[in-house]
Picture 1 (spheres, rainbow, N blue to C red):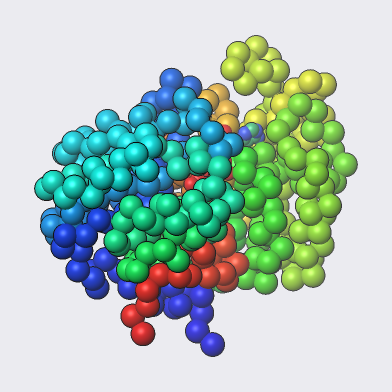
Picture 2: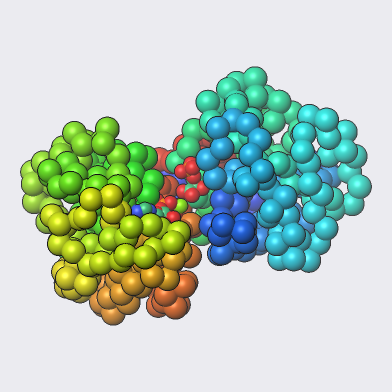
Length: 403
Ligand code: ADP
Ligand code: 3PG
Ligand code: MG
């Protein structure tokens, strides 16, 4: 049986097809971290898609249409998630004018007009109800504005949405972009014959979509290090009072099951023993380091504490492959970024093969000044976890194959 990685490596790439005169639609992942003023804090995901877009520009297509989501809007317009905020940065990185399209159906003729090298950027595809539900009619509409579909959205490749999956039924030629290819190649190095012990460091705030993946990953790893808001949920499931911290009560049973599965597979679990707590995230007046059993009433756990940093650092130091997704705290605020920064240094100080994945984690690592020291920085968070689990990602499933 061929591995999931080998299967995904077998899809055709942009280089295997001719796009001359074609309307090319590229699904990219421009879901970049932004601050409260809507400044892009890390444009890695846009930069990583540039080779694919430039290749298309250089190969005489009719037009290029870029499709992405940003954030998690609920199927309708929300100003803060508009792609208007991305357009300028994209133009700067491409050195080229990008035309913003609010309604792709209304702009169908424009997209088909074949004026030389026009690049269109569609408004956030998740403003449409049919995107996340992978509605067939919606996927068909999207498919009708292109002749060639290129999936280069590695960060979203684990989602079965209309623009990452459903659309492939309505376009004849569908291939992977260069970022998808590059990511698979890098993960093949990390995951096909990994050197043990393998540590997975998990954190961040996307608890519901990531906690459900952990049980299936247990057979593949030796250590699981849990921090960030993810660990709040685990600590809550063990009976700790997490007060006003971010955690998800409904996932208590799943957290317990993950811990049981870890035991069954002899995976060593590391969790915070102390945390940084605050009375407020935006205007902190009272910030303290306390043992996890002593979180003050109404306070929030927003970073791992110094004893935990020590514990986690020792755990990663004795690993040979380290995969990291999810910051250890609210790293966007310098006051709550120390745990994430320290752990980043500990990970790169190990002699392990180190992979970091996720839009926010990649940003955090860059802010910590350690980005050059990781073996590989992936644009995928959830996507890289599903790879680790052994899955074929939905975004690769229905692309044309070389064999
Ligand atoms: P990635 O983008 O790397 O996959 P996530 O999106 O899952 O990571 O999580 C990143 C977010 O998690 C950041 O915005 C960070 O502020 C938040 N976070 C981490 N720890 C905590 C915490 N203890 N409480 C609240 N938010 C947290
Ligand atoms: C990510 O940031 O992990 C990807 O862009 C996917 O986003 P999602 O978890 O909202 O589907
Ligand atoms: Mg994120």
